[in-house]
Image (cartoon, rainbow, N blue to C red; front, side, top):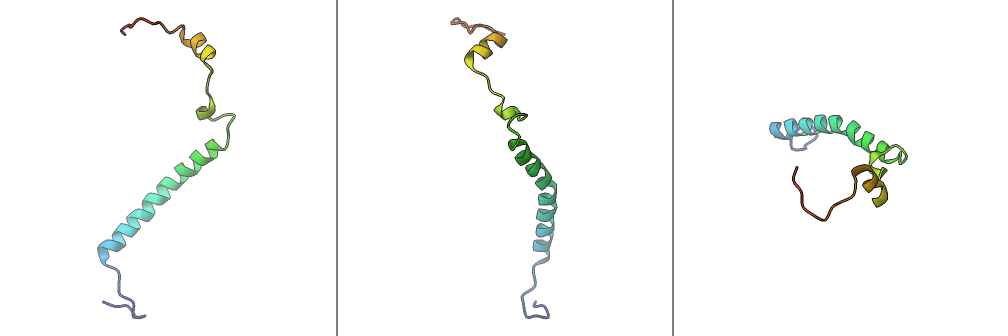
Length: 70
C-alpha cells in the first residue's frame, strides 16, 4: 500500500517495534545521562576511589602466602 505522497506504508508490526524502541530509549536515556554526569564528578565518583597497596593492606590486613578457607 502507498500513502497519499506515493510512499510505501510501513508494516503495522514495524510501527509497533519503533514505538517500543522509542519507549525503551526514553526510559534508558535518563540512566545513561546520570552515568555520564557521575563520570564527570571525579571527586565523588566511586570508580575513581582507588587505593594504593599500603592502604589496602591497612584495611584488610597482610596477604598471607598460605591458602585459607572462609
